[in-house]
Image 1 (cartoon, helix red, strand yellow):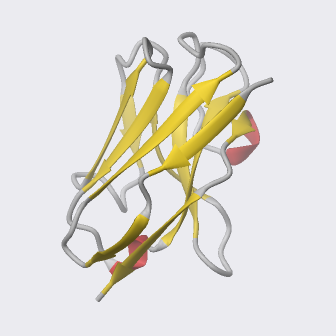
Image 2: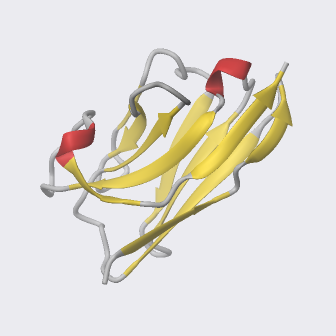
Image 3: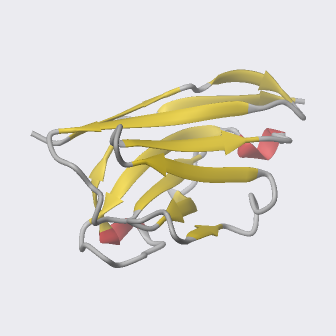
Length: 125
């Protein structure tokens, strides 16, 4: 049974930092892109960043580019998101996900088939 578990969320002041982790179990995902998405209250879930299977490529939403860094450790089957210079508009539930088709690099929710339960990130002004 595949399971993704996020951790590292919390309350932080604007300008602060948080590091999210996503531990995967049940199978390895070394052939798959892994991504982070977020969903704020009343809004649709949106793409934040992804990293390809060999960690060769990363891609970020414009809203987080230069502030967030995605990384992965395939040996530990774990995905990370380092978030710096946080802003109140970054407040959301953050989800990790795995792309449904190996060796693809999607940015839309429908192309990811494994999801974690989410971790809350709240940035106060």
